[in-house]
Image 1: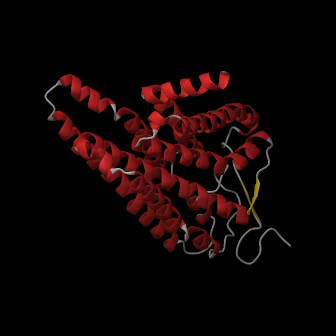
Image 2: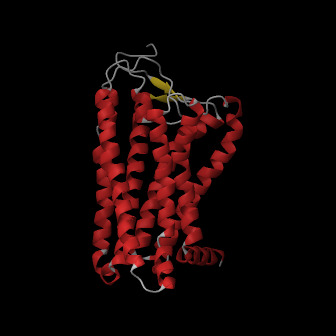
Image 3: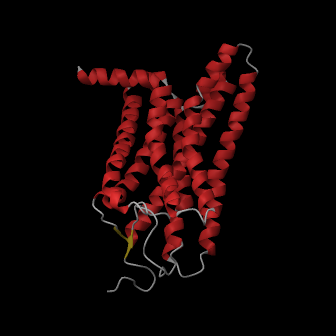
Amino acid sequence: MGLFNITHPAFFLLTGIPGLESSHFWLAGPLCVMYAVALGGNTVILQAVRVEPSLHQPMYYFLSMLSFSDMAMSMATLPTVLRTFCLNARTIDFDACLIQMFLIHSFSMMESGILLAMSFDRYVAICDPLRYATVLTNEVIAGMGLAVTARSFITLFPLPFLIQRLPICRSNVLSHSYCLHPDMMKLACADITINIIYGLFVLISTFGMDLLFIFLSYVLILHSVMAIASREERLKALNTCVSHILAVLAFYVPMIGVSMVHRFGKNIPRYIHVLLSNIYLFVPPVLNPLIYSAKTKEIRRAIVHMFHHIKM
């Protein structure tokens, strides 16, 4: 059998960082450190929330969901990224590429939904604190988690089929060390209008709406905080939002940058495209556990307490 069958290639070739191929082996070290921090840090947070009774609160349940999605995102990209940079093993089967594409986009959408749920948690905690415990019950939290997960998988379920229907014959070389929908559809030698329209629909109806509602929630939070008479109490209320705001920025700023570059940066060097995509996928899972560990004293205390028990 040749490289291509009737409709698609038997495999794709992944790409590391264009122009730095000779340095891929040395770049593997920092990548391994980032994966270790992402997987280790989020595992520690999950375990801390599980074993520490003081963290059995809505805010930390949502943080656990965020840590899980970060770990899942890291594990979805880890095999191909490390194979590409460490072993220069660039091939990935067509079906395996479809699965990885679906998982990466699904866990990314899941993270966006969780960040929205966390903003709702902060809104209720600050704007309606007396009803916090009755609004965010365990049943409501479990329901929100299931809704976020279901939205991700149902919305993105058509993506693999939209790629499968395309005759991919321009090339079999992808632009990254992992599989993404925009990369794969650009290799098709057929009309990709449906893919483009569906991709924009998903982007606007999920990520765009999530970001809009997060913004609106903070407008309402800021309005409530400004009504507090005491400056000290205002700062205390805002301080409970800092970790979430930083997590939102770590997720959405690279994503917006990637979207802008892909649509309007045709003359920008290719390595800039790749670098921004890598930042979008690799940085949030690394930063989130560091942000919450550094800015949330309850998390720090629980982690210290957990390791103290381990040593004993």
